Image (cartoon, rainbow, N blue to C red; front, side, top):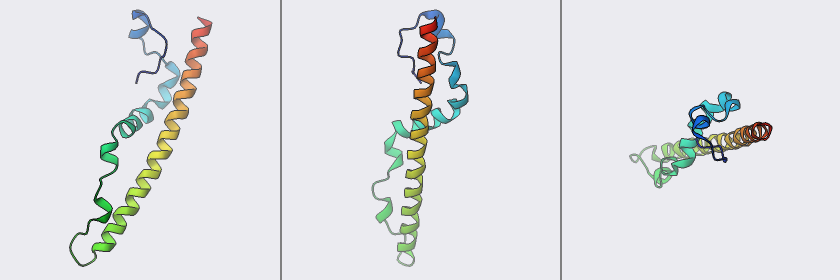
Length: 99
């Protein structure tokens, strides 16, 4: 997670740059994986595929619903990450101004 937009010296680089982000680290790492790797998020043929003849439609529908729910969750997560990042950036910029 490279967040600091400022050129950091070697001393600053060894210490974790944004200390206020300690609360949001777990959420950000998880979300970045989903946002950076869209190949996993959307299997192209999954909703239309039928498993067997009997009850194939039901399974496909269930799968489609699961995909939609996961997509909603992903979108919520991305919004949270964006908010957390902007908040951390603001705090970090204020600290840099003080120094």
